[in-house]
Every structure is written in structure tokens, then in C-alpha cells.
Image: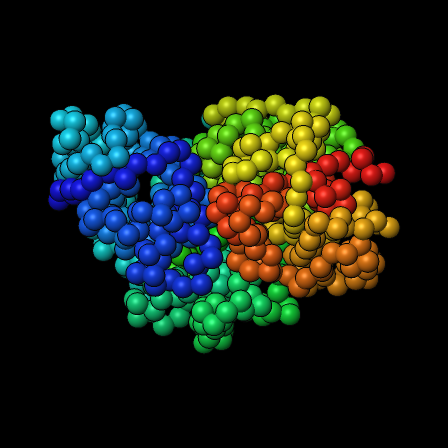
Length: 168
Length: 420
Ligand code: SF4
């Protein structure tokens, strides 16, 4: 699968309070959350993001709270993936559990400017900056996580385990 | 090669002799926690699979604390979804308003977390219980749903960094200052994906309340958990608190650590973390003149009775500055009651502070103490991100309860020494 879109570029330590401010956590409706995504650091984002675009950021993306509303808001905003130098750990697992693709690609991040056209090929693990004409490798998904994906996600995987242990 | 505290607890819960950093495991959980913000998503996910009952109705805790007492209609709907689920499933540890508390203070106080446990919670500050020599970490709502289904969680075994404390802390230095100093030294991703394991002869000087504060903010250094060894202080807190037996886990002498950080408690001053990251900490003497509009004492970081006592020791017989609003949130009903019995509530109210029912409220900019554009607060909470307590152009400075109280009197960030 190839993801394609433009880059929205941010700095280091983008926290979950700016991805989706807590004042909007009185709902878990994805469309509503998407309307406020990133608004405390970028008023333009939610209004102008195009389907398939990428969030590109520095280190420790998604630090702060455990709110799954953060990856949900990003996904519902239309972004196809987040590319960062590194991710905060709860955000990492939430993104994975909710099906938002994320990629650690420090060198690519350094060389991406806002608005660059990017293409990520998830199958062969490559990221292409089409604006700059450069290509980068991205780390493959660990085997255990591939198992979860094959089972149809974390919840189905756990439901199958429960059946094994306690019966239906 | 031996194992660290975290490795040992994870191995026991994964049914393994040994685990190694980097390994992905499925582990049994002793308790899974959700709140009024994160549970609704987990409940929807749980229901979507058509599974009838949770794996164990005694091993789930549901606590309405973020937007409760209900802030508005939407938060009331979310709280109700959680309440309905708790009733339908017969969840034993559901805590209604009036009998609740901020989850991370409530659960250990109620004896629901004991030493040696593995606890996950759909809240990032679930790492608080490491203070009890338990492994606990924050996860998302889908993880909570998965745990409600099978009683398990997938975890990557973290590397552990050893934090060696020595010496005795000086006047006005508390647990908060120790952790703010550490985060200031290593940065908000300084322990990313790692376990912070405390050690050293300085531990003896750390009361349980301080340990909770220190473990609470492990996440602010990017860590998976922050864990203390079991000692006499832990024992005194844990004994007789729970119907469940606890396990004393000890790190092996030859355990492997990814690094070591030494902290001389005697050299520390009270710390203040400047906006907009907890790593922007400075010694109090280097703060300069920072006028403030609001002071918040409370939260899962510093809403314990010891914290209220500390604030009161400064506030007693004094008045909150005319330009300042001071809000005090005891973390649980029990602490609220204790504060009334000890006369602390009276000290706060007589000083001109608002003394509230337990809630997360202003800590996450939820309700009850939101900052306007350009306003500044000193808070005993754990995060000072952009917009954390209200308007994106407001500011939060993190400090310990004594410094917060002194600042309330002074109308600017300052030391208790300036008013005594
Ligand atoms: S007090 Fe603040 S940090 Fe603690 S659980 Fe509540 S919102 Fe989170």
C-alpha cells in the first residue's frame, strides 16, 4: 500500500494536549475531535489538511497523556500517517492499536520541509520525498505486531486468546 | 545475568523464568483502570466484539475524576456510559462522586494496588504505583478494552536506568523537586521507553507521599514506569491496607542497567518548571520576578494529605495575595475529610483559598479553574504544556505545595523563606 500526500511539519515534543486539547475530551466522536486537531499550535491544520497528507515532526511525538483521542483525531483529520524522529511510548501503542500508521525516520524528517510531496510504500518499507527527489528506508513492523494485524487487530487477538483459555 | 525490579515483575506476570529488555510479552494484569475520558472508548470497543462479560469484575477499576462532578451535558453522558457499564458488569471497584478520588491517589490508598502487582491504566499517570514496588504503566483505551476481555496486556520489556539518590534533602525540598530536577537533567524524553528504577541510601529520607509524586512523573521523562525498591517505608504503607497479599520483589545484584544517574539530595533547592515543558526546571533562587494570577494545589501528583499539610505550614495565619486566586483540590474524599479533621480546610478557607471536592478539574484544563489568555498559574500538577490549564496563551509553572502556597501569598513565584 502506498500513502501519498503533503507534509505538515512540526518541531520536537509535540504533546497530546496540542494534538487534541483536553477541553475537547468530553466527546469521543472522531469528526468532532478532528475539527480541533493541532489547533493550539496550528490554526490552519484542521481546516486545510488534505486526505493523505502527513504529519512530520521531530523527537518524542505524542508525549503526554494516554488519550487515544490523539491518534483518532489525526486519523479522522484525513492524515494518512505520522513520520517523526521518535515517538512517545503510549502514543506509539495507541497509534498501532487504532490503526494510524507511524514511521520513525530521523534523517527523512530532517530533510523534509512543510509542503513537500511524500510517498510511503508500506510493503517495501520506503519513504520517498518526491519534491526533493530523495528516498529513505523505514523500519519494518515487529513480528509480534504483524501477528496482531493478521488477527484483525489487538481486540480480536485478545478475544481469540480468551476463547482458548476460558472458552466462549 | 540478573533482573531488575521491572524485569522480575514482568517475568512473573508473563509466566516466565526470565525476560530481557526488548522482548515483547503478554502479561497478566492484577488491575486495569479507566476513567471518564478513556473508558467510554474502551467500553465501545469492548461492546463492538459482542463479548458478554469482562474477564474479572474485581480486577477492573473505573473512576470518574476528570470531568466530574459532571462539567456539562457531554461529560455527563460519558460519565453515565461508564456508570451504566459498571452496573451492568457488576464492576466492584467503581467509585461514584462523593466516594471517589483522583484515580492514582485513590487506588493505592484503597489497597487496590499492592507491591509486586502489574497494573495498567488508560491514563498516562498510572505509573504512579511504582512507588509501591509494583509495575504500572499507562496505556490507551484499546489496550484497556483488550485487558477487560482477556486480563492481559502486551508489553515490550523496557531497559532500566538506575537513579541513585544520596544525602538528605534540605528545607522546603520535597519529592516534587527531586523529580523536576531529574526531568530537568535528562529531558522530557530522557528515559523514553525505559524504566526508571530508584536506589541509594537517600531513599530512607523519602516518605511514601514523595515516592508517589516521583513515580507519578516518570511519564514526564518519557519513561514506561518509575519504580522504588520495597523497604520499611513501603511496608508501613502496605501492611493491613489490602485484603490481597503482596509480594516483595527484590532486584538482583547483577541486574543490568542501561545507565545510571546520581542525584545528591542535599544539593537540591526547590525547583520550578517553566512553561511549556516539565524539563524547563530551575532552582527557585533563579526564578526572578514572575507575577501570577492563580495557584492550584492538588492533582495525582501533589493532592495528598502530606501535600496539603505542607501548603498549610506556609499558609497558616496568612492571606492569599489580592491578585491571586488559590484553588485547593484534595485528591480523595478520605483526604478531604482528613483535611477537615486536622483543621487544614479551615486554614485554606481563612487564607482566602477555594477548597474543592476531589476532581482533576484544572490540572488538565477541564473545568474549575481554567486560565484566560495571558494568565499565569503556579500549580503542583505535573504538566505545563501549551494550553494545559486553559487558553493556549496562558502559562503554567510547576512547583511543590510549599512553594505554591508561598507564591499565593506573595503574588509572584517565591520561596516560603521570604514570608516566614
Ligand atoms: S490529576 Fe491531572 S494528571 Fe492526574 S489523572 Fe487527573 S488530569 Fe491526569
